[in-house]
Image 1 (tube, rainbow, N blue to C red):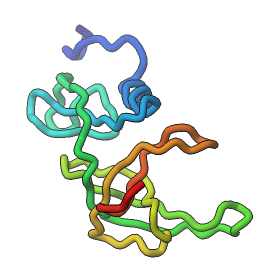
Image 2 (image 1 turned 135 degrees about the horizontal axis):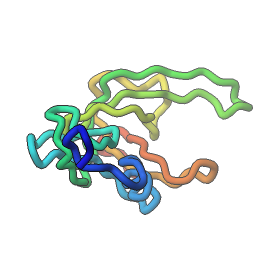
Image 3 (image 1 turned 90 degrees about the vertical axis):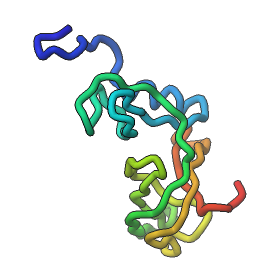
Amino acid sequence: MSASGYPAFDGPGPDAQFVQALAQGRFQIQHCMACGQHVFYPRALCTHCGSAQLDWIEPSGVGCVYSSTTVRRKPQAGGDYNVALVDLAEGPRLMSRIDGIAPDQVRIGMRVQARVIDDPAKGKLLVFFPAGATP
């Protein structure tokens, strides 16, 4: 135990588990065993109750677009893309992008599904697609 009364932390940060799972093609978030809430971005303590009793789960991946913006770029720079805030069915809100449709077609309230994709330049990425879209 540390002086604060919380378990001493030694090793890679909580985000290491998320990154490792992503590298294996899996999307994980934390679940607090003390209060039952889900947590994302990975942390050492629950943001809802302060407990250190966090385990990892694979969420449904179902979400709803909370907000989105289109970033405009020249075609030679890769073209336009969107940045979206997505509310997961489990509760956490996270930032990602919506693929499978034109960036300016993303709408607030749109149902989406998470997928881990393999980007040749960036490796494994967590992105969302419109619900019901096929890969």
